[in-house]
Each structure stands twice: as C-alpha cells, then as structure tokens.
Image 1: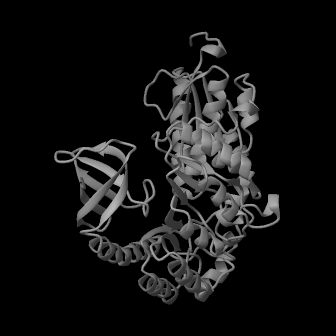
Image 2 (image 1 turned 30 degrees about the vertical axis):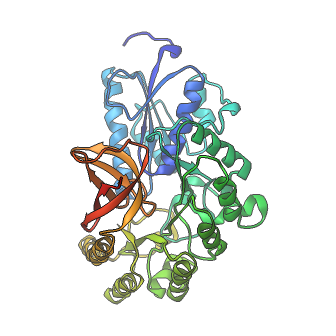
Image 3 (image 1 turned 120 degrees about the horizontal axis):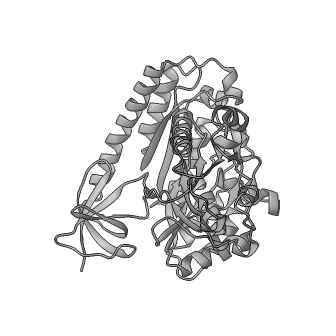
Length: 437
C-alpha cells in the first residue's frame, strides 16, 4: 500500500437512502472541502483512497443495500485498493455494535449526529462559519432544505426515532440564511424535508411555526418554488393552506403520508388519526387550495391487516382521487412496538396488495393526466435524456412524481430554466408537450 499523507487523500462520499441523508452528506462534503480535502460524491472513478458510506436503515431492502455497499468497499480495503473506510448514517446508528463485529475492515462507524467525530478522523476542524453554506450535489437549480432533525411521533412501525432521535428544529433565521446562499448559487427550487414537517417549531417557539417559516422563505428574492415534503396529518396546522394560497412561489403541492385508511389498522399503527379526520383534512385542502396536488404514501401488509381492512384502503384511494401515490410493503423492524405483533401477512400477499393498490392509482393518474392535454403549464427543466428535454410542473417533485417530456428535435429549453409548455399527450405517469412561443 502506498504511503500517503492525510492532506493528499481523496475522499468519495457514497450516499444511500433518502434526501435527508443526502443533505447530511452535503454537510460532510462542505466541511471536508473547507478543510482542504479533495472530495467527490457517488463517484465511479477508482482514484479515491478514502471512502465514507452514508447508510440507510429504514426498511429491509434499504438495510440490505447498505450492508452490501459496505462489504463492497471492505473487499477493496482488504485488497489494498483503498486506505480507509468509514461508515455513518442510520444503519450505523442503529446497528453499530453488530456491524463492528461483522465487518472489522471498517475503520470506524459513526451515528447520525456524530459529524464532528467523523471529521476528527481526518484531523479536520468543524467550521461553524460553513453552516448555511452547504455545497450541493443536486443539479444547480434545486436543493433540499432540512428544517429539523428527529421525530417525536410514536408510529408503531417506524424505526426513525431510534436512528434520528427526538425532534430538533432549525431556527428560522438559519434556514433563511441557508436559502439565500443556495439562491445565490443558482437554486430556484427548494424542497423542505424533515422526518415530520408539521411539528416544526414546537421545541424552539412553543408553537407550530411552519407557516412562519414558509412566509420567511417565500420572501427570499429569486426563490421560484418552495415544495413541502413529509407532513404528518394528525393535528395538521391548517394555516399552511392559507399561506400556500397566498404566496405564488409556494407550490400547490403537499406530500402527506397517510399510511392507511382503516381505523383499526390506523389504531394499531398508532397514527393518532381516523379515516374521517383524514377525509376532512383532504377536503379542506382542496377547498382552501383548489389547485393543490396531493402526494401520499401507504403501507400494506401491516400485522393483522385483513382483506377487509385492505379493501377499506382501496375504497379510500378511489374516493380521494390523489394526484400521486406511493406504496410500501410492511417491514418488521426490531425495537419498534409493531415488532411485538406477529408479522402474519405473507410476503406474497403484501406484494399482491401493493400491486393492486398501485393499479387503482394507475387508472386515477391516467385520467388526471389525460385531463391536462391541451393545458399550458409552467415547467422547470431538470435534464436532457435521449430525444427529450425532461422537466416537472409544480405538482411534481424530483424522482418520485410525473415528468414532462418535450421533444428536443423541435424545441429548445435550457436546463434549470422555466418554460411554458402546452401538453399534447399523456400516459399514466408522464406528460408530453411542446414549447409555447
């Protein structure tokens, strides 16, 4: 193995899991570069001699991907192809002792809130002046803004509080400063993320302050779109709908995971809400913001879920006509309260129910997209792919929602710019359009 000094190290940060992990990786990259390290993100080049794997530990598939990735780099370390291997993130937080025992090739494991300890392995100082000046790894025109860490909810299926701790809000002024810095670098859209958005402010301001934050961010000059992700339906602060309707740069978009619609399942999930209360909230959202696009996710195969309870969920999806739906299959997670229940829905039944629910939503999505043909909509373009420029409307977030495809042969738009597009065709999950002169 070549002898190297630490200051000549090249670091490759590998990010697995959700956008919240991505922000953590961006903060790490910012600190390392602030200490004069050469750092790349998710690079396929083989010239980095130090690897940091930022893991996900949310569900079985994510844990498997994280372990496989660690093992991949552990093998490279054994061969002498890399010098150091560090692991951080949710999986490391949750299973640190076990991982240390099973994968001794890793030089050190760190939890979700141990960035200073990880930096110490590089003899790097944590530079407070870099807070709010995050280097982003996303395309220049959009970025994620993590407004809080942790979660105080007690959903019986969820291990996030075990990995991320209690809810801690970031002050409004710090988030405004970070947003201004992002806009200065060319960011036009920010996506607000947290384990749970609507709890924001209770720890700092003794009240739900998401609306106050939204108004402050909306005032940032040059910020075109603000998008809300991961809102919790119970005790939802209804004034969010008022500020959404009031401010043009707050997208008419709400990501609000509902998880189920059977009262008996919701009770076992400890969701602190009933089906009727969810229906009332969705109706209120559409009344206050008639153009709103609602994205939600559901969990099928929860312990004890009967066919009748699943059919209640199907009926709810038909009734509510959501713009966007995602479906997860239940994963039996250690140390959650649901782990005390028998995981009695067979894997093939979970998969079948997920497919059936998505088939219902597929028809809904197709009808809603067909209704957009002939409409002219404002689109933000993310990339060029093959023969198309690919963008999104305000009703669509990155990677999880619909895309707008515009033929590159007949139209030209700049990546990162907005353009008015007339929709000419539609499928279940994509819109096709042409540039309006």
